[in-house]
Length: 120
Ligand code: HEC
Image (cartoon, rainbow, N blue to C red; front, side):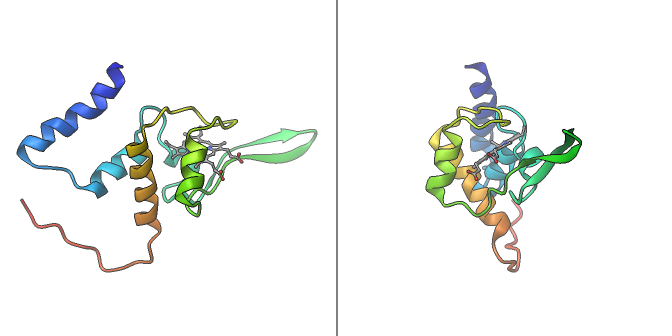
């Protein structure tokens, strides 16, 4: 699977000199998994997003990516290992699903003072 290597290589390269934090990794994965970024259909914080509007029998309808920021981890996991109409299949491994879930949790946490990372 060349795509997987492509994803993992930067991580190994990074491990040598510096490291990427869980925040950075999960943010990157959410925006570019091996496929279209989740944010394009589910919104930046997983709040859901209208992908397209169309007319059906003269009624205006929306095609939406649902809100995914209020699911339990089990629901989230189940959803990503099943097929969904209108959503590409990703074949993510469990660690990636965890990272994506983590990303959404971080994004939807009540605002606190941002932790400053020490400059390296
Ligand atoms: C091309 C648009 C598109 C992209 C990209 C996309 N999704 Fe979806 N997703 C959908 C649609 C459409 C549904 C089904 C909504 C429904 O059934 O009402 C869905 C459903 C889901 C669900 C289930 C929601 C529920 O309520 O059960 C989850 C979780 C989810 N997506 C997560 C993700 C994640 C994480 C990514 C990135 C790896 C992603 N999606 C990328 C369109 C997309």
